[in-house]
Amino acid sequence: MNGPKIFIMLIASLWNLRICSCTMEIGHNNNGNRNDAQILIYENDKIDSDGYAFFYETSDGISRQETAKLKNAGTELEAIAVQGSVKWVGPDGIHYKLNYLADENGFQPQGEHLPRRQSSTVA
Image (cartoon, rainbow, N blue to C red; front, side, top):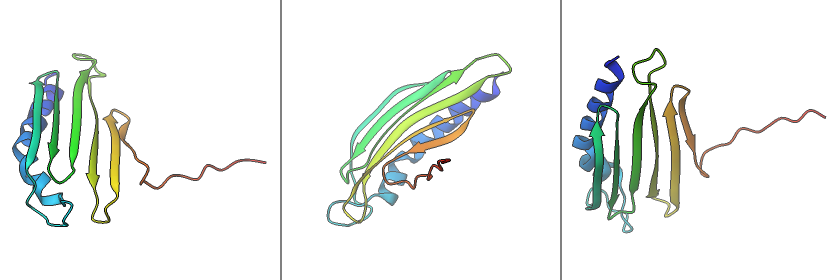
């Protein structure tokens, strides 16, 4: 099955092309100004048919790391698993962190700032 492998390569390539402009579009620096962020660190450790890995940090407080791996290659259960995190400083000055996993079970975000389901208890 080449579909997921081609998909990994396509997503990784598109992401790497857009990383600079996306970071600058959504970023706020400590002065509240938009679009003047500088990339401080950019690491692209791996891009191949089995997955990818990258990390970046910008001067406006944004950092992101992500890895993707092809699971069960060549089987009917072949799937891509993406795991990562992103940190940023919001316009309110609060530091945010979002961890996520995206795989055959869907997108699963975790973060202190996200609403939580109220668990119901049976008495």
